[in-house]
Length: 545
Image (cartoon, rainbow, N blue to C red; front, side, top):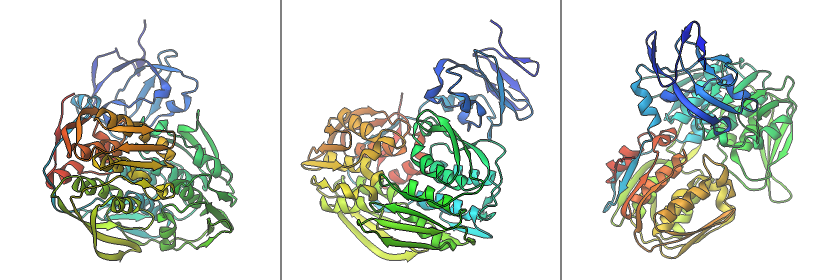
């Protein structure tokens, strides 16, 4: 068999090749089915047109990386056909390969109690939106407290590719210099959004309203998630989409040349779909209207108004909400203060509640009424949570939370509450596992199309930890142990940061340690999670495969 060559250099499987300053490794992938959406070695951000050919090239047998004037090549084993693509980061040594291919196991062991005061990372939802709207504004937007997790940093890289500037000073303050609505430039390379479904869906909304062509991809988890739910309504503006089967990334979008406003009724509650439609409507004349059957988080509406857009929100005849955006406004740069993320606060809060004797204060947590469904549910379960120093910062409600260890009891969570706590059901299930009685969660089928099938992942993980669960298409019932969970298992995280953090929380109140098989994705939303938890008294450390 003849192995392909690149610019006169020949490469062989399972061999190291040093070219220029980079040490690179050729990786034999065998007959990997392309739809599995593999991860590239060395933690590379893939930026490749190869993904657009997945429907044609059914199998990729070899992935070759070589250094040649900052160009890298993917070689298809059947055709020996090479396509150039640019990597945005490159390894300095082959040792990084070993770091990339080994999963990051973490073990969480029982703790007596948690105590202390700590601040949380910035709200992920608000961070994404501040970057995107800053890019569409005229002038400078200054953001304090931006979440610097991988998801948000990928959004920052995306707006740079579209012509905006995004810079960070030594104090952690971000400065975005926007190009105005209609001023985005066509990106020269593929936009990689890593693990971020929010970043991908909101960015598709922005792109749909601009007459440019862009290619979007992500990691294995994101490439398995459906995008039709945003592509379908965005097509109404005149945008065109080409994707893999099921509307999955990698995806090409050709924005509308002359976007036309639409009226769209959400078939299921989704803040991401609502936001994508509103963002697309910014560059369309007239009125774009989204009809919500149930209220979802409203950060996009609040921030659009903050940047100068005109929105009218009214009640419909059927009890729904009509959100009407006046198109083609001139947004102006603003000051944005990002509060602590209530979704991140959920993890140390639940850990404190299920550990007797705990007393923890979480400062500066966002208390948007459409984000606090978890805290309402925990209160119904008997949680001792005190909301202190309530205030408003940059239009968002904020408070300090004091949480004490509590005896929890099972409850039935109203299905209509799901949009206000959809990301928190996994960690709620951990609280339910140690509560007295059963906790019933219905109307949660949205969990099946998150970073993983979270319903299945939670059910399987709890079962492995010795907790009885019942799983249905849109419900989960957890039979609490009325005390510590047995534990003593390894949980598959399926590249999902919230699954990883949830089971590490359960480990703090289990009889035997709980191990998660891949903690790497945690940094997408909660950088410093382990240090913060251990600083409060948790016992989380590296594990063995």
